[in-house]
Length: 278
Image 1 (cartoon, helix red, strand yellow):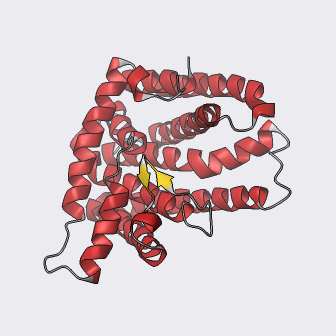
Image 2 (cartoon, rainbow, N blue to C red; image 1 turned 120 degrees about the vertical axis):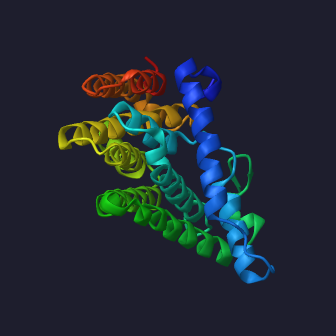
Image 3 (cartoon, one colour; image 1 turned 30 degrees about the horizontal axis):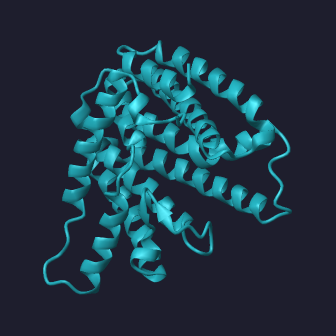
């Protein structure tokens, strides 16, 4: 059984993921409407939709919605940021899959974008998803600047994490020498976007700085734990597996402690327990 399998999620988490997938997919579908008349522009939008509406857990946009509610806000206020996070995440996947990066042929159970379309279209589709993500945040009026600043900073961390990962893979092929070295990559490549998702939820709730910081730290903790779980599922870094398993649990405990400072923490606590294997 996989460490992160929606079929094993607690009822509250399963409900959150299901509702988030439906709501965010509707939002992305609306934002990425295919223009009439066909042609190159329509094909590009089709490639963007192929990436952004592919089957997936939608755990990052779900975190935006859950964080907003945990901080006392309304889920509807977080819908545009949730769609932005998913589109940005999908942009990174499209580009990661390219031959110049990971050279993957499959993503989410079907051909990657550069295989289903072509490499040039995949590059443009990724660029388009990134642009659409920030366009969604620009609609937040008074909160737009704060939201754009958060997603920009977290995106820079994700890119740095990918650079670290590529440097490691392009070296002698050895696994990271220590858990600290591995976690440095995981925190940047995966944890940063989870942290941004949770912080965008806080911004959507218009909560105070202390709760916003707590949610950002919560997102970093469960995002890093999520990546350790993903390593377990893939059989990666076996020499560090025992240490990583203990660290995953510790990160879950950290996330739960942070969630408990919020007005409505229950779903975030259940999410942390599931991701960390507690």
